[in-house]
Image (cartoon, rainbow, N blue to C red; front, side, top):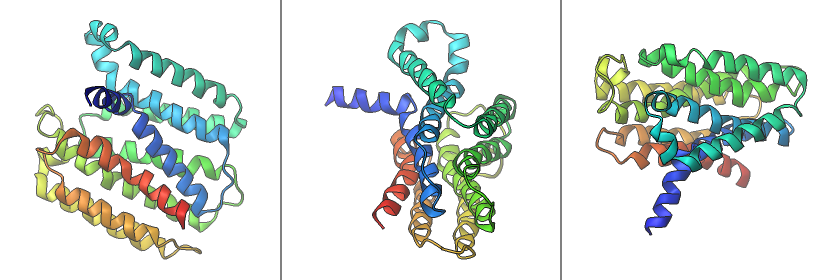
Length: 256
């Protein structure tokens, strides 16, 4: 059991789960809007997400504590392998798609500067995920339809909502100088904010040419996760269960 727990923790700590979640969001876009799936794109999304999240999560500890590298050799090795794999598949992409990923990478570079501004940080992360999982796949299709703009806005809204449990859980350890939503407004108003964003996410679906009723289930699940989130929840509540919502959504669509 201890070995299984260690493997599971490594799966989470190495950002493999969040990588799978972002890949799931990309495939949701492809399924809903009937965009041809491309293995090269999917590989860049998954492995690029793993590398990107590991850099953002561990860059501070790497610069302050070199011993951390010695204690986490497998995480470093996996990140390096993910970087090389993402790089290989990146070179297989069309030039326009490559430029799109480079542009997103430049935007992500602003994250360290906005980290102390809770709302701006959430908006930046959500905007980048929407670009990766909706904007980039749409580069493979023409013309851009109204459904693209609706899907992009939906994706932005649902990602912001799913970040709320993380904001609440992290508020117990966040530096008091950080301007996170729970610190500025309290837990309950933060939950209300996240739940209210689910309403337009759901309503926008029915302005599409081919609405999917799966968003209703996803909306209910998201609201429940926000409602039951707290600073006392286990780390697995956010790092596994909340991050599993896109994966569940993907599986749900695949079965319909």
